[in-house]
Amino acid sequence: MAKTPDGAGRHRAPFRKCTRSLRGVAAAAALAVALPASADELGKGSWLADVSVDLGVTVEAQGAFRWNDSVGQMGELSVTPELTIGTPGGFELVAIGRGRGDIFDALEPGQPDQGTRAPQSRRLLIDDHGDLELRELYLQGDVGDVFARLGKQQIVWGQSDGLKVLDVVNPQSFREFILDDFADSRIPLWSALVEVPIGETMLQVVWLPDQTYNDIPDPSAAFEPTSPLVVPSSMPGTRVIQRDPDRPSNVFADSDAGARLSAFLDGWDLTLNYLYHFPDSPGFFLAPTLTPSGPAVTVTPRYERSHLVGGTFSNAFGDFVVRGEAAYSTNRLFSASPTGDPDGVAHSDEFGYVLGLDWYGLDDTMLSAQVFQSVTMEDPTGMVRDRLDTSFTLLARHDLLNDDLTLDVIWLTNANEADGLVRPKVSYKVTDDLDVWLGLDVFYGDGDGLFGQFDDQDRVTTGLKWSW
Image (cartoon, rainbow, N blue to C red; front, side, top):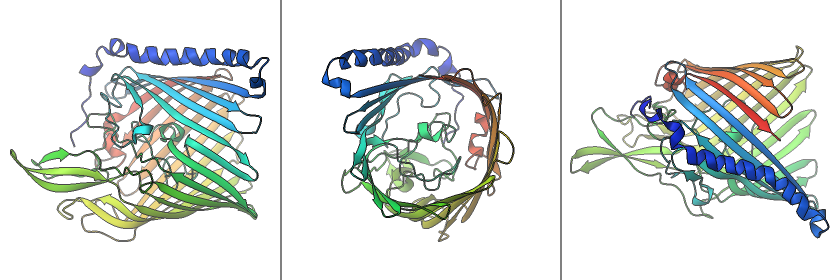
């Protein structure tokens, strides 16, 4: 993969280029502010008086600048309106949209082809600097003892911080690697969720006919993946032909489905999970190709079926909370050296788990530690990653000024590659509706590591969020 250029020339006159994008975001904000009054007027003296309408809007401005050269990486304004309509029968219709404009165009240069997304889940791109997206749209409510939620939504399994083990029902956007909040980076899917009580347990059944998978940044993006752990490496001097993803597309035959059984037993919150799915990260299959200009290698991202069986547990013991989750997955695809595996993909079942310990023994303070481990059941020839892979996270958070000021830092590190990420952050609640923050994202390690590949993307971040 080519090394990410700094893109300084592309950023010289960004304000003029993204005027249309920011106008669209501003128009969305104005409409969102005007809607509540209109809804109240419609409800007076009509059957609509029995319908509740609640509209909230979040406006967020964020900036990120590379530490080493002060080049702008993100200058983003986003508007997220959320509309909830309640009916007399107890059902709710929830709609969440998002309009976003970025003056720098470094996270997703140009207009991504969205080839990993199903057509019904794609964003509307506004030139190179903005997009509009229907984030969620679902109807939810109870029918007797059964709860159902139908529509575009997020389904969250697992409870780990920083890295994921069971939270794999929805795909993820990696436009900011793993730096964005999970709730914002998770890609909502058109799906159905039903929860049925069975004695002292709760059975959740999910069906996902939406063939949308992880958003991987394109070449030249700030967080373009280059580590051989993630993308294939080719022989020096070999021309590479990149094909579009071979994405499953049959709504029924290629849909995902799963179930989760949850219970509270002797102080323990327990779940048992099963998911039949296409994992959201593809294998990058290599094939030798003869072209008029000479030999080349064709790279085709491809998805293959997997069964996942796992579970979670958590319990509180005084000032401590113990929690964990585990998952066994069949037929996982891992990057392999073409000298050891000609097609560049190694196959193996995988077992992964996380153990976490949270401590609340000091006033207004929380300390948390996690250990993640993943082991492949086989050791395929040429597999790039180690058979046993271990990562750790440490989180410290302290609140001051009656919880208005929050200091926190999280450290993520991989023991195998000796690389990692440190993220200190200061947040201040100016009012109940307005938060501001300042932070750092510092990568370290060798360029072959998952974190070290972004060692030249250390950045300063700042932002504000206004909700009403």
